[in-house]
Image (cartoon, rainbow, N blue to C red):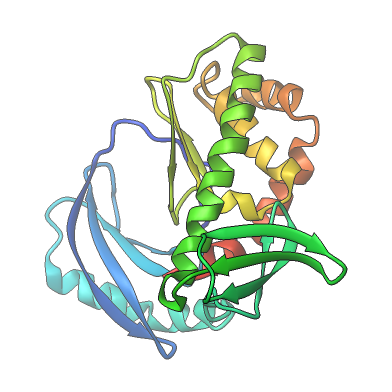
Length: 252
């Protein structure tokens, strides 16, 4: 499975041809077919967490060829997806990590408010107030607010160190990458990174800020990234091992 969590944005040569669903391994997954003028062959990718599929095709490929390609790789898909756990749904009684620490989700339907983070004798908790229908969304909104607070501060710290400014800082729920940096200096982060340990969050920000100065993944880039985050190698390895599990958590 390809994670691609640190791919950078550039001028995008891809064109979306369509989106539908595909049944495989007992799951119904979204399937995106994307044309890429740089592609020389058809490629199939499973989104992080098994959340969907994407086929990239060269220009002019016929629909029948796409179907035959998908059929030939059905066995490969079933094998890979059998190793991906079903997506855990955010609900009362389960635990989700916040900055790497597991928090028990408590629902308080009779009180007003959104989400409160507490630590008591029984451990860390996220108490979610209001209608049960809105619980998962409110937990997601909580993580987005925490991401903005932490990551804005980290961007400010690291950009001051490298002497470059970020044009903008945005937050999204992306499945193919954890962070990105555009040629004009706009940074983007997946708010799901707030479930990772704090050093991993710092590494991700350091990685993208380093791209403001080094627009590649060459030796100078990794040297700068390590200067910004001395624990780069360990954090990069943690995200590669655990990122799929964070992407698999369902907030819908």
